[in-house]
Image (tube, rainbow, N blue to C red; front, side, top):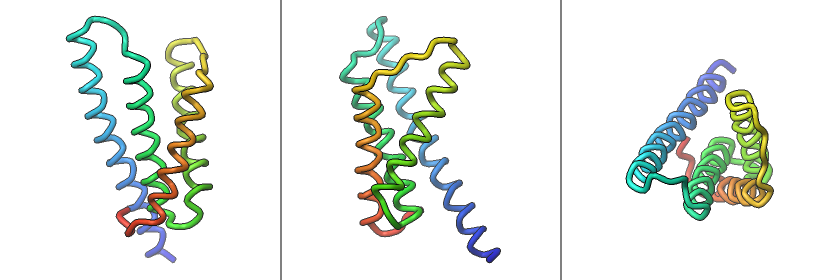
Length: 123
């Protein structure tokens, strides 16, 4: 019992370290883009970056659980999207949802969950 809890904790830590490194790289690229162009991000670039992040989230959690990838990806996508929107609301005071971006993000998290289940266990 203790051994499985250690494995689950270790797996969760690996997932969040991977996602943090990915976010660090994406944020660096985004910062360089803003510094060079001095304008806001292109919606297509925003869609691609967000899509890659949610694909990675779904993949990581699907690979860690290794069962029911579609459901795990859906839950991971919804939970992370809700947390991000809540943090954004608390930080800025405005709450806006782009339904197209939300649907694409959750769909890609589900695809990532299915991919994670079907590949060798990494996390």
